[in-house]
View 1 (cartoon, helix red, strand yellow):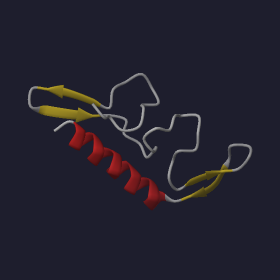
View 2 (cartoon, rainbow, N blue to C red; view 1 turned 90 degrees about the horizontal axis):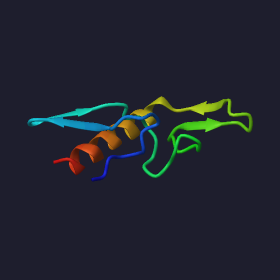
View 3 (cartoon, rainbow, N blue to C red; view 1 turned 90 degrees about the vertical axis):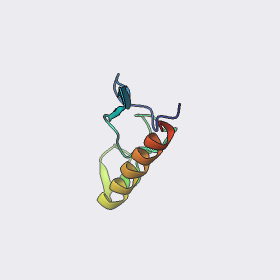
Length: 75
């Protein structure tokens, strides 16, 4: 079952209870990226890992895209 990007911590993105689906920790990372790369839309880091550019709108769109993918994958 597709769950979006791999969680950064030890938790699932979804938990179903009865006919309810609970989501947790859904961030802007691109599916297939991990916490050690720059797979976050709208975020640029310099060579020291400091913020170079930050696009809030791009990150919000990415979060909503991940939520949509998770919901579609889970019915």
